[in-house]
Length: 542
Image (cartoon, rainbow, N blue to C red):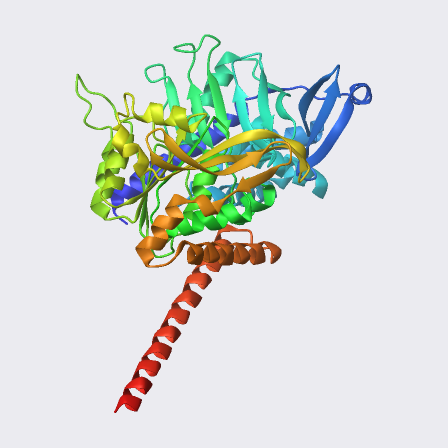
């Protein structure tokens, strides 16, 4: 490895470790419940996040719900040993040559154990349970997010936000929606330092000169933040939108009811034939999850290029190019260091992709994407809109400026939304649903293929009136009836995968690969059979 790269990497590691170590002094206020308070408040649900050291209690008090983090407390002897150990780590820990995200915890844990053994006389005699508790706090404060660590690692939390000092941190719970937590910042300097720590973790910069931040944390969670009181009245603020470590597969969406098996099979046929799809919906509706799921249905050997501001999409295709925009520093009146989505969409055309996927269109990149689709590339994108009519109007207005005649090039539109369900599904009263699916015939003329029923939580899907299936059948020399049978066959494959418990994206991708391999083998056998029949007929003629 070149020396300059080693120096840069070592400098970055030292900077990050410095942030981890100073985080020991970044304390937040956590309000714990006493025994009397626990008796007064009704605990609706309780579950472990870091067993046996940290759990979450969902409580009801005076008609309102609250999210309470409950962590094991250190006794005076344990706290003294903890502070000494932190001091030893700060002074003696040597940054490794490489520090991957998942290795960070293991590395700090191993070093903490080594130093605890080295200075065992100074740290005092403690039980094994006490040491486990101390090591938990060492990892939490140095490699994690301090008092916020439990919320970050709670799989039921979708969104974490803090609006300023002396204000409780709010969370969006999958089951109970928006809740105030028992954690808040009471010191502005501490709060600002924590924002800087988040910026460093996302490998971004934030300061009074550049008080806005849009980045991604090591766990792939989306981070938005403001710094001090430059642009936010109440001081620094942040919002973390959490993403699953294991992205949803098409089987997952069928199981949780976002779509049914027939729709999944329909999308599979469309994507196989380079049909373009746009996913629309409001904030938190599940647009990115839907887009990521559709990626798994693209042919395994097709070349795809994804274009995003922050890398959120996760494809298992080997033939995949992932491009992200860059915000540069402006010198004088020119800004030649920034790279926009528009620039990346133009660049992606040079890669000869089968599909160009744009994480979200909101500006001139929409025009470039529609131009690309017009030249024969497949396109998939998302956009904020609450109906297809509004989406079309946004597309044809500034700054997107897509001509009305180009709108039908985005052949299919899926409207996803977060809905209150008529009955609980998998224990949840709310769920994300593909509320409407349209085929775009021309600007202002749309063919409704599927509609979700809010009273029955079912889908009314009619593929017999599908214009796109008719178009694909004509192109392949088939009848529409033949293609509808193919959709049914793929619906059966999805049903079998669901029954077999094949839910991960890798397992679903393997199912799709296996389907195409068997189809190819069937075609080869058919060719051999046809050739033998022709040869036999020729021999009879002689």
